[in-house]
Length: 291
Image 1 (cartoon, one colour):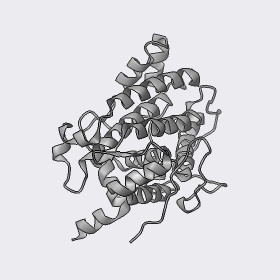
Image 2: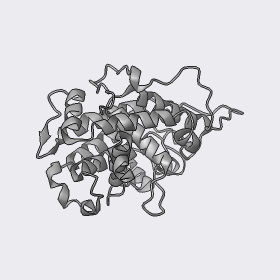
Image 3: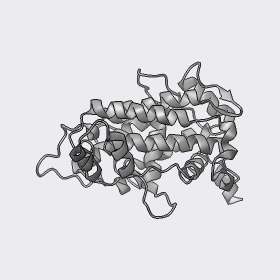
């Protein structure tokens, strides 16, 4: 009974689908292989090598170049999104938990793929370990925030910016674990997961996408159309490219050390109860979960 109640919880519902999607075959992107392939036509071998060993920003690759590569990747991934009614034909779908709808897992899998590609272009560290199928809590937290950005929630934008700022200040090559799982960012992760979880039924989820992307968020064969994917990917790209982490001119000052675990924040992060959405694209108005 307890498991059933957990699945009914909006936060648990969202996390279950995201975790299942992240474990589908072909969803995880090898950072080194992707960067080498994506940058091959526009960057020198030395720049590519440094981008892989450090970050594209550390290699001095201009954001304008990364934007072009990102657009190529978005077009490629958008082209791969098929009607979600064909979800049963995707390898691994039959192994999904009974509580996870196959169409949503497939759609989320495509979103996880583009989130990784955009993250690696804009100097985020490797999101997945090479060891097994496990997904650690920090990665789940960052992916949840990325999805929140895709759906236009300002609290997710603020939290992603905070995480990026922590990493750029330290020039680290991994996610700030404690901040994402216990510290300042964690409550925002939980809120975003909970609000997105409310939208996880096919009808309400599709209705939310329709509000986010007017005239596009239709439901076809029980799933969301590929036309919803493109604006969401572009929204994430726009936000990640605007952060200092992606800027090659940003450098850590000598002697500047931030531990990335406890952050003194003089400007509180936005909360889902007080969303203010950007003007670049229509966004979902998050609603309180209904009992």
